[in-house]
Image (cartoon, rainbow, N blue to C red; front, side, top):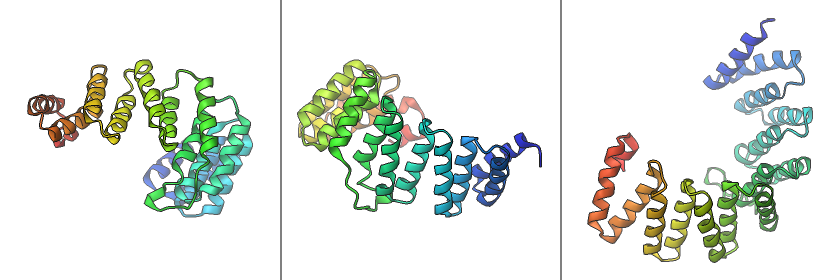
Length: 258
């Protein structure tokens, strides 16, 4: 019983195997020995969540937050549990607000809250929660994140999505076009911009964007497939055939299926 390192290994293994009752027993013993260990509180919460003990899991995640109110991870675990697992975005919202209040100058934290407001209304498991994200707040967070971390590719992607939600495709296009210049190897820029052009009815522009992105890609699998699909639809047999051969050369099961 005093071999804490071995018990930690047992806790990790139990969580991975889905043996949540065993995980809870190990976590409780360890929490008693190390009451200020944030990760143990989170692991206890995961074990309780795995047994559908929602209130107890929430209390354990909250206890992890209280150990160090400036640590973003417990807030994110708690908020994600409320949002994704319990499908309670309204309960997750104040958790994100507390996180931003604790770390107002953290770009990643601003992005986390913006992502929540952009996506939480859709929702979990395809089931609508009735929650409507705060778009003005999301926009403010994204602009703050961009200012705090000008090199953030995530900020560019999410800001472009925000502009689309605001029905401003021109601003989204400008955002992603600039993103392709500053982050040429981030395939999300080309893929999202191509989707935007396609959605606006400009297939040749979408093809051009994908080809530009492909020139900077190490393997380009994420761009090869949509580009080949567009070329096949357009009847461009020669270029489509070249991409099929390139896909075949990748050799992975996913590439072969495509």
